[in-house]
Image 1 (cartoon, rainbow, N blue to C red):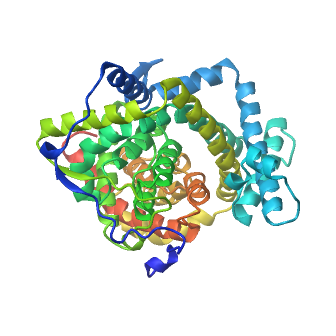
Image 2 (image 1 turned 90 degrees about the vertical axis):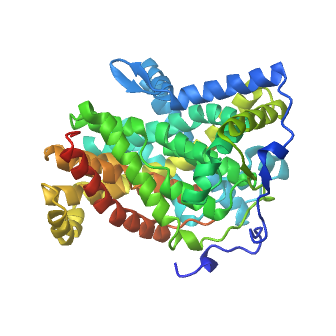
Image 3 (image 1 turned 135 degrees about the horizontal axis):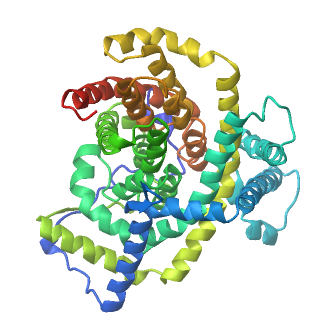
Length: 486
């Protein structure tokens, strides 16, 4: 962790000397916004934004359309969803095995088959090869309810399969359709241009990263990863940008925080919880981007660099310019239908690549939590800190936060019997930890192996995030209580 050499790769493109152009918006020739291109941009942007970003009322709860789509699919046939998820896991394990055996010269696959199966896409490390294959056994055992009783207890299966696998298996392919509409038909450029004056000075990130963050907060961290991967592959982000976005902004989504709030019976203060959670997330991000290890990740690119230009202008000029950039991208892109199909195919591939790793890792974490006191032993030294910060039920709060590093839902719901102050405090901390080792961490390591992200690096960042979040969340919680918000 001491230097940038850990992440450097001679085959990647150095970011040194890659500087974004600095221009005044007045000096830019804005795109002619024809009716066809404008409609294409507006429809794609409105559709994608509606699915991810617009809160709606559904069965008495506030949620987003993506969640409704997933609910409708599951209500139509949960058996079909289970079989679909099993198919993704099996495909990921089998294709990874064929790929690894082929590239290790154990078997020979023709060039035509190699291209048809896109075997290069499925190459990974030995560890994740094992995760994807082992996941097939876990999945079959869970769905057939055939296996050791100690492994198939309801709390473990319901979380690993019902909450995590099903969510990842559905949200990536479905969400990828709408992510691709935003990414390829102007939404990314529109939001990125508007957010640039905030993202650059505060977080040292391109303005386009605001869309990744919004997709994570209002949709799913997996959708945020997909969008980040998409831009990274096209040279829009360097390694440092990706590391910061994934570890600082892909926190628990609003829908999951809402589900936890409902379980804890604190939905009546949900707007306050979300506001405090977002404030804490942004404060921690602004700090971590300026210190190691994030500050030492090299600004290398894996594709021809395409840095976002820096512009100056008034608010109205920015709005006009952002709209023009969005329409320009939409005009040059494919049709809405073709873009949606490409997004679905990419999403299916990505889901097949990561869902097996998610299942294996979550089962390991949940089994350790369920059958051993490891997390309670780890919590003991930190209880005095909770006392000092004035958090009621300090032991419960500490264990909840430690469990949150494994899985947000487990950590947050551990405080179901605690006081309101403790519940709010723990939900803020665990929601903003971001690097949950049940799913996001293995997904990051697997999806961004060319940076590379490593578990040891992510663990250090999780510790740093938690160390910052605890006092920040304590101050925010006590402040909200002092003025009567909770």
